Length: 372
Image: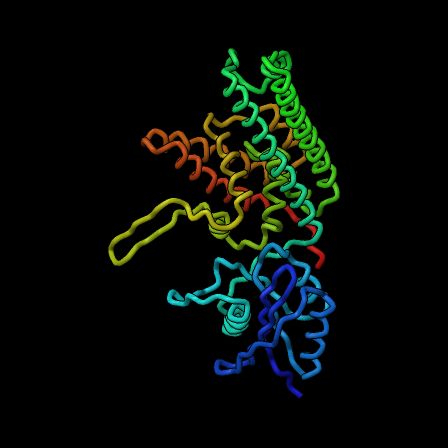
């Protein structure tokens, strides 16, 4: 007996899941199944009931804060499931009503018609490394805020640092020796300085943990190979690889550039071609890292002592790609600046092309397939 294909839309929230089912065929029935708790056991009950009706299930839900446990659970049971990008879900311009029921039925209907764009679901070990990288970034943000608070506190007291460069050894010694007018202010400054030192220590601990975790990661060959590029040290390479995962899933470098949101936006019609700022879609963390790395190509091409050390033991084809990247990007930076282009625009253009060289290196280095 042939199985009946059913498309299951899941509108997932922290405490609940609204389920809708679309039958196969363009005119197939679309109905609300109901709402259940966000519990894997209850999901299993629903899936078993549908499968017992001789149904072949194709499930879908939006990527969001609830992560991928449902996807991994369903696929481990042999049930087809995809996670889709919320920003790429087609929406009617005039539709002003949004609720869980509509979202679930909308997902089921669009999944049946094949109009949804699945997102890449990382391997659990890859996701764990990404979480560690993001934790470091969060603490760095907290550290920056504490430093801003120290500056604001001193500014309110009319105190300014007489030196040139802040947060170096001389500046920190100056802060430690400051004498405030009132004891309460001295306590406040001490607490700020203690918080800054605590955040700095946490960042160092996490960086050490990242280095250790890389040694057991299946992505280690790509992480090592990317460090052959100028401007990409260990932490930059880990950030890019942890955020993007297996780069072999991109068939062309243009796909990677578009995923990173580094391509220009466009609003053209007829004979009018109008391009605007970059789209800024996709992964923000990786895009920011590449733009920071692109700053290294402002100077003429050369292999510094640090780069040569990172390149030790790497394949010749990887070294050739890295050197070609230097020759092209350093020359391109100077040429665009000479044309009078804005510095930020030039750096963004360099970051876009740098993504292409990263793609080429990742394709040249084999990695172990992910376990699902």
